[in-house]
Length: 483
Ligand code: SF4
Ligand code: FE
Image (cartoon, rainbow, N blue to C red; front, side):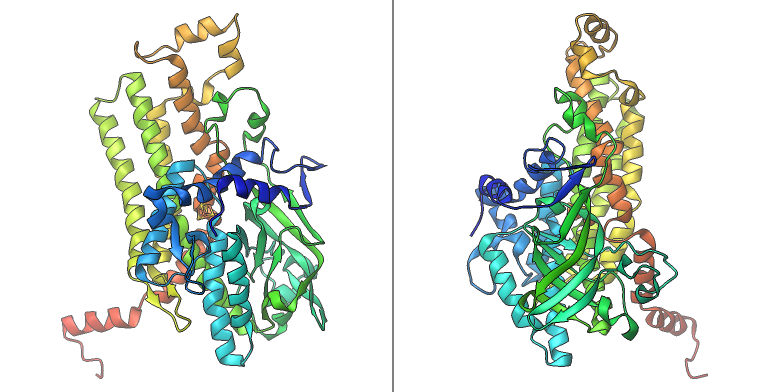
């Protein structure tokens, strides 16, 4: 089934989530003015799947039922699927100008499709069958899943079981005949309260003493014992103000939350790893590589930012200056270089024993490493072109005031044929993406989402085939390996 955006919104209304923000419990999450823009962004993933011009990218054929499904709940069956996933990320980043949140669930499902298969092959367990049954449920109902990996981690020098507070990594506290009881938390959960399901995975490689921490499972997002505490974003309360100008992006945004699991029961049918500690790193690595590919979303947000910078230059009458043109070229060069990286790791992917197609992990990590850098340079150039007014503009209320409005419209007039409000709106959009609420999604998330820069460098050092490189060097300069 393909849900419509409207059906998605209605489905969220039925959830009984336990959500806190600004010290208050939220009775109505869907209509909350701070959360709603993030719901709108996820709703785009449903809306575009119904548009004929986007259906090739936004939909796929389920390998378990043969039915048409949203690509966000699909298990990649070919290189073409992986390439389309990259294109889908750029499409949605450009349509929303922010994080549209649904990729974490897609990446968790794909990673689990491989890891559950591989655990079964090693241990004779039945995780893959459980996973497929769960997948069928997710596909049938076109659900949004939150992929929950990052534990709070406490003292970083200590292993999970050595932490003074054992809950700083999520773990199993009780094993019952029908299921398990878990306790702990997951931090920075993108789109958590816009999700129907939450898929939990371990956050690091583990050894035997941490076996109770080697656990993966899925729960409905409103399961008993789960609490969400929404994170602040700079300028978030602007969404409570009248008018849309100062928001920059009038419709869309993202959100993150701390998700706490307080003795939550998980039935066996929804458990996908339980104590197979040697597969914790396997799952982390696969999810991380898929999610690093997903950062094609930033290319789409980059498209919006480059467009905004060009408009700001045109509105100021400086777009013909050679240094402005060159800065726009540089921004495009960086943004398309990012696109190349995401496409490359998709195009050089391969089939795993489970049948799932997996990205080239080395290239996915190289791509994400570039994502920790290039958007910052693109943002710097956008701010250079925008000028200081982006950060010193008076409020929309001052523009509307009978006392100050006339003065502001007189002194902030630039090109005669451009309304002052257009100039203000585009500067507010650049502010939103480089300093405001979307900056979480464009800059901080580029830095730390899908793993901080050092995590990619560790993977690059592991995956680069140094022996082969040395062999080639020896061969060409005449060194005999056996001498
Ligand atoms: Fe998807 Fe990008 Fe948001 Fe991650 S940061 S959930 S890849 S849109
Ligand atoms: Fe992310």
